[in-house]
Image 1 (cartoon, rainbow, N blue to C red):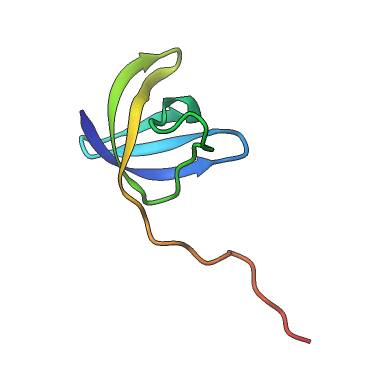
Image 2: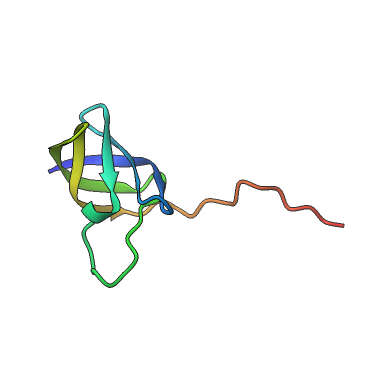
Length: 83
């Protein structure tokens, strides 16, 4: 198993990238996230994860992804305007 940190993940499209502790970025698809099949599977930026690296169609791909430490919630990137 390899450890890494989620670089980014688009939950609408269902994919993103993990920066491996061994160096380099690894593609991740929502179907590779381990957990309850009935729950919505997603990752968040800076989540710490453990995963296996397999060879995908376009290079290294994460498989059996497990969140080992969830990142703290981030504030929205838009400003609130008060009138």
